[in-house]
Amino acid sequence: MGDFQYEGKMGLREAIVGRRSVRRFKPDPVPKEVIEELFEYALWAPSGMNRQNWYFVVVTGEDRDKIVKVCERAYHSHVKGTVEKLFAKAPQVIKATENFFATLGGAPVVVLAYADPGPYSEETDIQSVAAAIQNLLLLAYEKGLGTCWMTGPTFDWEEFNRLLGMEGKKFIALIPLGYPDEEPRPPKRKPGRVEYRGFSEEEA
Image (cartoon, rainbow, N blue to C red; front, top):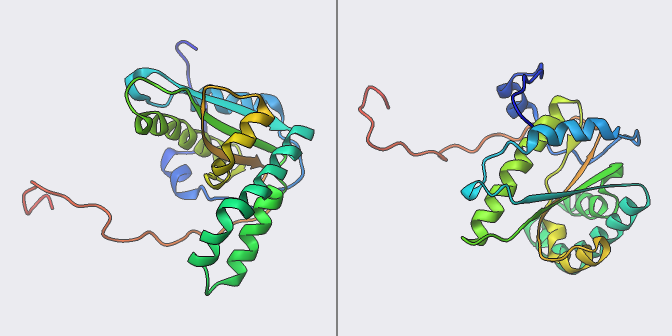
């Protein structure tokens, strides 16, 4: 894509503050052209050495249902123990998490994010794809769509790769996508996460 004029109406700050992880979706299909537009801009993310080494697989229909089945198995084989330990005092969270892995909230579309391994480091590859994922999430919110950035399913990467016929790429994340059927409340931001050094007292 060459020179372009972006015609989005939502401000960047509004998108950043308003975006939420959605775990319940309407069954309405998402038109392919809408998803294509999301990726047209999402792929303008920065990447290590400008390799642009991201690769996305967008799945719907029967293939989407197969992906959900693998997610359900991944929860029980790799995720369940950690969730039950972290949320031992919140059984409702445990139950909701298990249900989400088993259904992906009814999202009609699933996006699988991969990285082509590069010459520098795995961390660089992951960060490059993560930048494109964040763009995708913000753009989806601007379009009235909901998403949820999931890394739990990647523990079963071999099964996903077999299902998709994927070789030579690292599975980074799975993202359910669709029109939201909930309005999650924003969690409070944790303080003390930024430290400033070298500024004068007036600037600080």
